[in-house]
Every structure is written in structure tokens, then in C-alpha cells.
Amino acid sequence: MKPIWIVDDDQSIRFVLEKALLREDLPTRSFTNTREVLAALEQADDDEQQGPQVLVSDIRMPGGSGLDLLDKIKAKHPGLPVIIMTAFSDLDSAVSAFQGGAFEYLPKPFDLPRAVELIRRAVDESQREEVAEERMVAAPEMLGQAPAMQDVFRAIGRLSQSNVTVLITGESGSGKELVARALHKHSPRANGPFVAINTAAIPKDLLESELFGHERGAFTGAQTMRRGRFEQAEGGTLFLDEIGDMPFDLQTRLLRVLSDGHFYRVGGHNSVKANVRVIAATHQDLEQRVKLGGFREDLFHRLNVIRLRLPALRERGEDVPALTRHFLQVSARQLGVEPKRISDAALTRLAAFSFPGNVRQLENICHWLTVMAPAQLIEAKDLPPEVMAVGVEGHAPEAAAAPAAVVTHAPATLPVAVGSDAAAPPAVASEVVETSSAGVSNWESGLEAEAQALLAAGRTDVWDVLTRRFESRLILTALANTRGRRIEAAQKLGIGRNTITRKIQELGIE
Image (cartoon, rainbow, N blue to C red; front, side, top):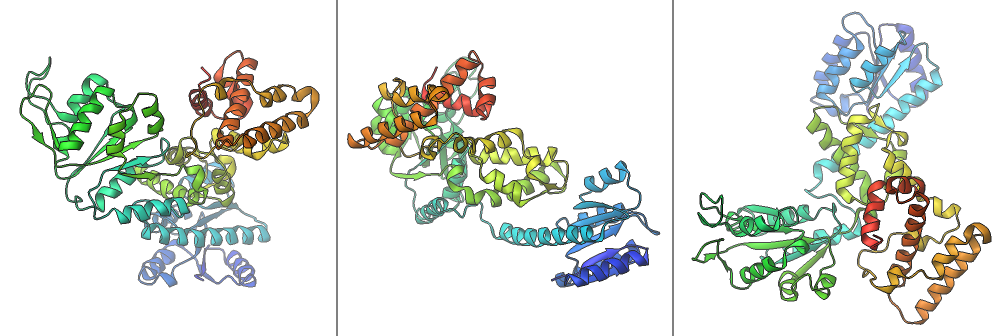
């Protein structure tokens, strides 16, 4: 292991720390001023093994302060933990140390066992960051060790020499565009353009022109001819995000392009040949949309040549630590600040969060932490309120003796129950209402009986049906309690505002 560097002009401090650390089998190297340290760092740049594992520095020394040293070290060695010692235990020094990226602030006189424990924590953090940096350097454009993500990576590899149409499904924020870009990057069309369009974000009246372009004078305001996304993606890939929201009449035009490779600009009379690979994505159940008449069945089959299902982040919790560290690095680069580290306890709490907004939500949380976390090391208490609230929610059902299967999110592949199953107030729901007077065993028994009845009837969607009933009744009860105020209902349930809004829409409660 690399040594602990101690920088202090006080010989007694250096001596005491050296002896205490050597007893812990931690090698040390001591310096009396900042100039010696900077010179030693320049020499160590050629040999990483000669550099420090952790640097412990006094704040006030002849020839340069510990804060100046901290600034210079962080500029060249941002991952090196630096502990600042000072006999001047004032708030300004502490704030300056943390703003400069110090690992911790140690006031003098210090308790020696506490100082050693702090240095040991810094060593552990340093070694953990070294491993994380090595993984980051070797990481591909997409991160994921979970089996579900490895399946996605294998599929991208198998499709690398193909121009076949691909349909990517998955919840909002799960990274569907990243998969589309990876499919393009590893395809024979990699040297061509990658053009993306969100069909749900463009008004219906403009979407046709956006996709196919228009001729001059085609409509009011069309002063010049404009090439659409199909022409812009010539020789490359066109990514149609949220394809399930495409207007029905435009679906017919898209089907024609996929069928014969030609289209007409709006107001045009000459067909344009499209040499484009189409990759589509949706968070919706297109089969259900077809049944309801909202999506053309023939277009669905044209798009559904190869389907890739992208897992929700809650299905790949083991990827949360790597993604968190990655996004903290990205946020720091974007904001021009020192990357923050995150404790194991905070990572554990994050991994327990359900992430209704998926990877995009985790990225936003990391941006928030980069700005709002008070220290360089993010602790569990620093996590945003929605994570803390929902994290506690994960334990609430146990306290109420609710079966885990009822409150766990249903797998994304299960069909959404519609009709009477979602609306009828079954025995399970009534038992929940009676819990306060009869005890939790009543509704648990009712739940078990209902599950047995559905299973005996040969149903294969029991999980989905009962989960929807449970969640519907829970939200309705909370809304009744708050006279329809959603934010207050979400707070009482211990879930986020976005979560209750999404659930109300999914369950059709409105």
C-alpha cells in the first residue's frame, strides 16, 4: 500500500501520527512544509507507487498554507483524500477546507484514536475510488452488470452487423435512446448520421413536416423547402422515440416508408427514396394499443422485427453504485467542481429506492447531490427528500404485516388489467378499510383467499390484478383523507409526488 503523507511544521505532531499509524501497519512519509510535498508529488507522478494513499496536512505552516496545498493537489490528483488539521477551529477554515475538496476536517488538539480512525476511513475510501476509477476507464458507453443488462449488451452485439428494424421497450427514463445510439454505433451505418425525434414532444400538425420535410409554399410560413428527419438520417439511423404516441394518420405514412422505402415531402409530388434504418422505442404496451385501436397492427409488426426490452432501474439494483459514481463524475465536469464521493450507507439507501424515473431520475439526483450535499463525502442523510421518504416506505409494509408480494412493483412484462378488475372494490380492499378495527389479520386472510380463488380459476395475471387493487384502494383512501389533495396524500403515504401522479394515471383512478 502507498504511504500516508503527513505535512506539519510541528515535529511532535508528525512523530505522534507516525508512531500511531505504524502500529496500524500503515506506512508514512513526513514533510515539514508545502514546498517539500509539491516537489515530492512531481517526482511521484512518474511512479504512482511512490505517491500518497492519503495526505494529512496542517492548515497553517511557514511557506504556504494547507488550503493552498489542497487546491494544488486537487488540481492534479482529484481523487486523493486530503485531511486538513488546524489549531484554529473556526467556521471559515472548515468551510474553506470542504469547499476545496477536503475529505475531512480535524481540529487540534485531536484525539489520537479518532485521528487514526479517520485516516483509516480515508484509506478505505481511496482504495475504493481507485477501483471505481479503473472500472470507469474500462467502462463502455453503457454501464450495467445486472443479468438483464448483459442480455441487452449481448443483443446489441448480435445485431452489430445487421440493418434490421428494432423496437426498444422500457419505462420512461430507462435509457432507450442510449441503446439506440449503441445499436447505431456498432452497426454498418456507424459512419452515417444518427437522428433522433420524440414523436410525443412535437405537435401533431408539425410532426409530419418534421419527419418528411416540406416543399416551399406547402403551408403558411413554408418559405423554403425543408428536409425532414428521414432525409437528414440518409445513410444512417433514424430513432423514433415514443412511437406509441404517433397520430394514427401518420402511422399510415410511416408504414409506407418502411414497406417500400419511399415518401413524399408535405406538399410535394416527387417521391424521395429513404436509405434509413429505423429504430423505434416506446414505454407503452403496443399490443394493448393495437387492441384498443390506437396503433396500427400492420405497423406494429413492421416495427417489431427485433424487440429489446430495457429493464427498469429497480430491476437492476446492483448497477446503482456504478451508475451513481459515473453520474457524480459527469455532474462535476459539467459544473466545473470537484467530484464528490458517496458512502456505502448512502449507496445502500439509493439501491433500495424504486426509482420511478429510472436512470434519468438517478442522474438528476446526482446533479442535485453535486450542488446540495454539504461535504465531499455524501452520507445517507444528504440524500434528497424523495429518496429518504420512499426508502422508509420500503419498510412500512413490514411494520403493517403486509405481504411483500402485494406492495412490490409488478414486473413490466405483465399485462395491465383493464375493466372490472381494476375498478371493482373486492374483498381485499374492504378488509384493508376494516384493518383499524379488526386488526391486520382480517385483510391478510382476505388477500390470501382472493389469491387462492384467482389461482384456482386458472388466472395468470394474479400478481398484476391484486397489486392494482391494493395500490388503487390505498391511494383512494389517502385522497379521501386529504380531500383530494395529491401532494398531501403522497406525503401521508410516504411516497413522492411524481409517484402518486404516475400511479393515478396508470391505475385510471381519475
